[in-house]
Image 1 (cartoon, rainbow, N blue to C red):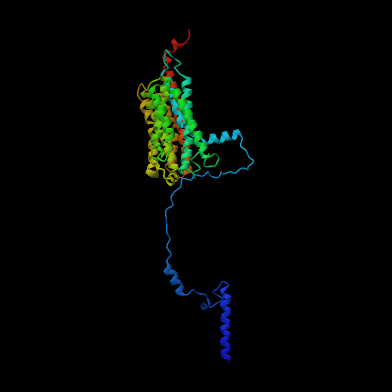
Image 2 (image 1 turned 90 degrees about the vertical axis):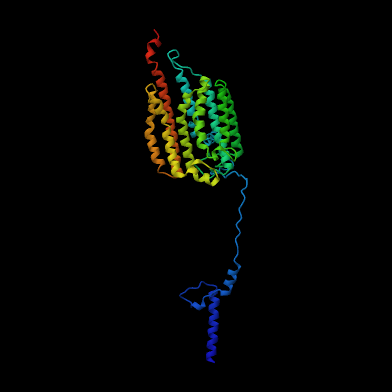
Length: 398
């Protein structure tokens, strides 16, 4: 009897343990192994036999484009003033890139003017109205191309997460995309109008150059098959920021074509090409994600670095070919003063691989191009006036 009661007591104790442990965390130090709740093996086999399948289906991309949320949300009663809007638009149009297009205008004009300096015309021949029309035309086309570029890049998902790339008007939610496109097209139209006025004195070939410039300014980034997405960005940059603008500005002043500005334009074209190539190296990751094909993506980092070095060195070749011969303008060799900057650039580009660092070297590359072009133009001006020194007595008033 006692044994039976003890057994019943054990049973009730076991029941109490099971009830208690079912609502508490089981600790290995307080219970026996056989008291730990377990899952029957049959249940596990049943779950294993079900073997649920996961179906993976591709999600088709949509054309839905939404205005991103602004980085800084102002109160509803906050209203931007005219000065703030002008500042936002100006910075959004990327004025730092303007030297790429304006330097060739200055170089072509200086070449035309200095070639007209002689003993009979010691001051040379310069047409300020023609220069102003060409300068404004190129300026408006560049600004319009930047805005159109921002719109179509955002539409295709390019640079949407790249803080170093776009102007930021759309990407920061400051301006509606349609408005950016509209202003960009207005700038292109005004640039075309000023280009027509400038080309009236440059001849039929100048009209052709101007028309080509307008087409490239729009289709460089417009449509799904833009020129920049077909790995043609570097080549287009060489042609536009080199021969096209330089020779065009020269013809606006003199009215005809010449090989001289074409030779000089090669240096600026190669420097601009190196700048755009470094820009594509910086944006490699974001371009790959958006399906944009560039030369930097195709070559990879190592070959892209080699190409950058070759382009920068190639910009000095015309200077040597023109300045070293006996009767050449030797003074243009002062552009070699930029060699220390070039060495610093090579040292940095060959070692870095981060977008932020490449962005800094982009700015240094553009700064080198500015100094290169300014020194070249100063050398051309001084060379032209030095040639007048033997005729100085006859030029001085009696």
